[in-house]
Structure formats: structure tokens, C-alpha cells
Amino acid sequence: MRDYEYDLSRVNHTRYRVEEAAAELKAMRQAPPNSYLPKDIRGAELGYDFWRSRLRITEDILRRFHPDQPRVPAGNPDGGQWTDGGGGFGSGRSSPSVDPIKTGATPARPRSNSDLVKPASDSDQGQHRNLEFNENQKAELRRTIGSGKGAYVEAYKYLHQQVQNRLQTPGLSIAERKELEAKEFWLRKAGEINADDPNSQGNFFIRSVTGNGLRFDDRPADPEKIQENSNRIGAFVMRNVLTKGKMPSMQGIIANDALSVTGPKDGHQTIGGWGGSFNYWDMPLSATPGDTVGYRISKDPAEYEKFISVNAKALADTVRKFRLDQYPENSAEAILQGLNAQVPARTKLEIIDRALDGINGERGGFAGDPYDIDGYHPRFDDDDDNVIGWFSRDKHLKQIDVTDRAKINELNTRYHIRQNKGEFHSWQNADDD
Image (cartoon, rainbow, N blue to C red; front, side, top):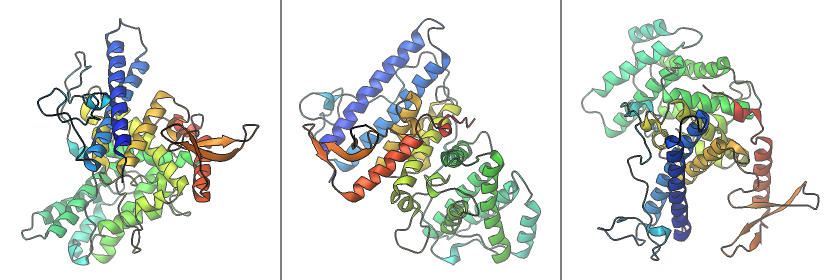
């Protein structure tokens, strides 16, 4: 059972930080010209946006896990907000939907939500749902396949059109429609990624995760390597259509994508740095019950640390590139909502927090603070060189030693990763523009 007081305190703390960040940014924007460097104002804008995104997530956790807790009565200025009953921060007002600190900013130009990475629909469980292709269609598909960068763009467009046509067929079952809709979205996004479309948030985010993941492991992350991985999944899909006369199921596509790029002779990545890991967190990778993308990442402390780190930097870079100040719908919150609602809220919070650390230059940067891991702190030997134990604190700030050997091993692993991949490691300073 979740701790209501803890979750409420997180909301209240985040509300305070939103207000603090808003006041700081407003002062910077209203200051005399040249008072602040543009990069400093940009950093404040990013920080403010990420604090607002964090607030939305913490409020959602409170709403979903504690629906019966006391709130301010309707009719009050703070009506509907959670309260601790004492009139303290618990009755504070949530951040408004309209940005309170904009000072004559250009109105946002509408952008389509289809540019965001969206969650996968249910995977195909039966071959009867797969779209079949005759010999003429396969011949047409062969003619669309090229080589090099964007080799499968036209092929993806052709398959996308076939899926759209099939979606117009009367009498489709709910399961058939879900599978086709998932394929329609995936083919559209796969084409953008294979073409390296500079206007696609999905393309930029996924290539950023891929590049971050490779650099995190000190591997080359040149555009050619990333393109090679993109072409690999295109080859798999086209080969299936041309040899079997049907598209693979979404589960088959995602499993092949994840497993091919993480193979030692293929993509040279690991699952925590795979570009689709956030989007397809719940997708099964084998017939073994529970063997999903998220499970493989979560069970391995090293992969989990990598996943949080590289996705945090990719999110920060995506928001920075697509200019949330001009287009607020490109904010961290909007991108997170589009990435995948299935990713646990706790994981989203960690990515937001890590992005804030990286933006603000906190200890560890995007890799996280090695001296505070989920509330656990290292204990050092007399020379302060070696970690000899771990402790947490109770609500009275009393130290509680960790005695579980498995937990100690996990914390040691995560500590060394954060130390080795911290703010001075080159992967954190790579420019993904």
C-alpha cells in the first residue's frame, strides 16, 4: 500500500518548486536587456517546464492511489486539491493550465499530436489478423526498396497505405482493428525514423536514445551506425512480407527490433539503450510469461540505470530542440504522455528528476546522484574511498542500515554506474542536434 503522507508531501514540494521556478523565470524575462545570457534563460525555461511535468505526474499518482483522501471543499479557490487538513502546503493551488509567466510570447502554432510517440496497442495473438499480400503487391513492394539512408521509406509508405486500406474494411473485430491501428502508427513512425525526418519528435527522441545508449557504453554512435540499426528492422519486416506474404505481428516486430539491435553481432546495444524501450515497455519479448521489455530492464540494475539516464537526456534534448517556449505542446509533459502511458509513474518521475539534474548541472547530471539512490546513502571507510555499507533514514532522520545482501549488491552496482557515467563523462555532453 502506498504511503499517502509521502505522496502528498511530494506533490506539495513539487508545487513549491513550480512556483519558485515560475518566479525565477518571470524575473529573468522581465529583467533589462542583456541581464542574462540566452542559454541561462533557456535553462530556466526547461527547468520550469520539467517541474510542471513532474507536478502532473505526482498529482496523478495521488489521484489514482488515494482517491478517498480529504480535499479542499468545492467553491474554495483551491477546491478539489488534496489537503492534509491543517491548511498547510496540502491546500496549495496546483499550477494553472495557462502559463502564468509568459510575457508577450508568440502564440503557439498548432501541431499534430500524431508527431508524438504513442503507446502500442495490444499485440497480435493470431495469424488471421495479419495483412496478406499477393504476388503483384509483393512485386510492387520490391520496387520500393532502396539502399543506404532511408532505404525503406517508400516501402514503409506502401505498407502503411495497405494497412490504411484494410482499416476501411467493414466487419473488423476489435482485436483486428487494434492490431491494424498499431501497425498503421508503427509504419508511419518507422518511415520517419528511417528517413531521419528532422521535423519528427519521434525520430529525434528515438535516435537520441539510441545514440545516448551507445555513447553511454563508450561505443561509436555515428549516424551511420544508428541508420544501420534502423535499416535492420526494415529488412526484417520486408523479408517477412516478401517470403511469407504477410506482415509480422506487432509483438513479432518489436521483439525482433529489440533483440536484433542488442545482439553481440548485430546492433551492439543493450536493452536499456534500445530506442523503443520507453514506447514498448510492456511488449512481450518471448513466450515466457512476464518476459517483457520492462521486465528485462527492471530486473537488471545496470540496465535500469542506463535506461533512466539515456531517456532523461533524450527527453531534455527533444524539448530543447522543439522549442517549448514557442510551442508549449512540445513540452516534457506532452512528450511523456505521447511516449507511453504504460511506463510506471515511478519510472516517469525518475526520468523527469534525472532530466532536471542534467539541465541544472546537479551532481551526477543525467546519470544521477551516486550519494542518494532512492533515498539510500553510502557509508564509506575511514579513507572515504570505498563504500562499506548503505543506510536510509526514517521520518525522525534516524539512520537505518541496509542488511539485505541483494539490496546492498544492487546499490553498489548502481553507485558505480553513476560514478563512472556522471557529469564528467563524455556521453552527457554529446550534442544530438
